[in-house]
Length: 70
Image (cartoon, rainbow, N blue to C red; front, top):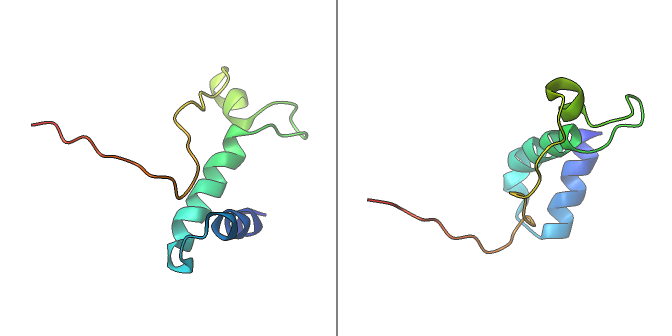
């Protein structure tokens, strides 16, 4: 389920439990981007007709920088 995926990600990343909503959003997003045995492809590909681009994903809890352009 989404909640079990979210809980697993939160425990593995050692991020405080008060961010559970972001983990639920991420679990939903990842469920749409990964292979589904019931439809034989990713839900993303079934909807858009192309494979999802996952190059933007990074490990939860990793260091991130923000670029502010003037």
